[in-house]
Length: 42
Image (tube, rainbow, N blue to C red; front, side, top):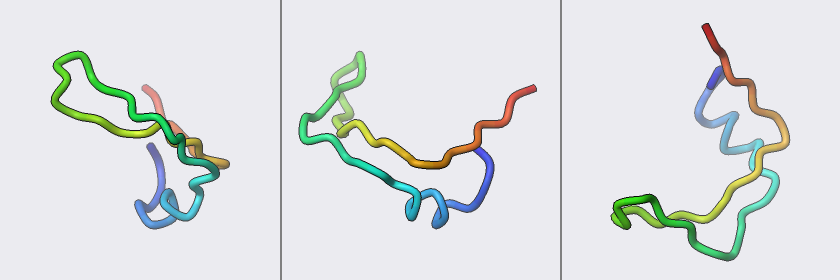
């Protein structure tokens, strides 16, 4: 992800109301949608 962490936080557009878990069931978090997010690749 490119950019500043605080800019990314300001770009949060929506937060889900259902928790999603990872495969090991150690981490739970809602789905977060950003209105602008650049992802850099190779």
